[in-house]
Image 1: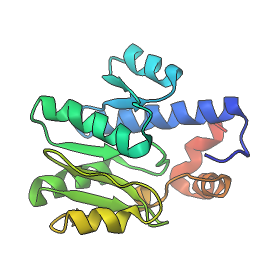
Image 2 (image 1 turned 135 degrees about the vertical axis):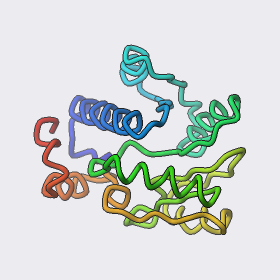
Image 3 (image 1 turned 45 degrees about the vertical axis):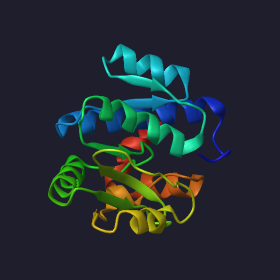
Image 4 (image 1 turned 90 degrees about the vertical axis):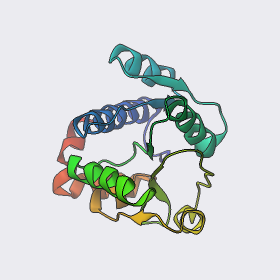
Length: 177
């Protein structure tokens, strides 16, 4: 997230995004598991009754592996979904699940070429960062691709946040930042 926000504002936004994403996931019938690097977000997850795993400190790839390891322990299919998606909707999550269930794997790109969501079952090799969508697609060639507004618009900068706030789905952000 951009340095244009104060540390407190970033924390408030991060928690609001995590809460919103977890609520949408639960509404879509998923079990949200938070891999949290922030102690306040981890405490919030526990307070909400959500499984929370500590971030192993290995970037997004390590955090994704941690979450998938939790799902693998119960032989459950999984979807790694980033919480920086302020325009995400329940129907978009339901489409991710349906596509994963139909195709075995699902990938959702972000508008900047990253990966907003990746799902399947069993082990996966993650390669987040610039251009990650094409790297993931190269590994999971049979994956269904879901490109929808709520998955395309992630928040990596102040301009992303401003853009999301101007979208009708982003009106909720006004009460956060």
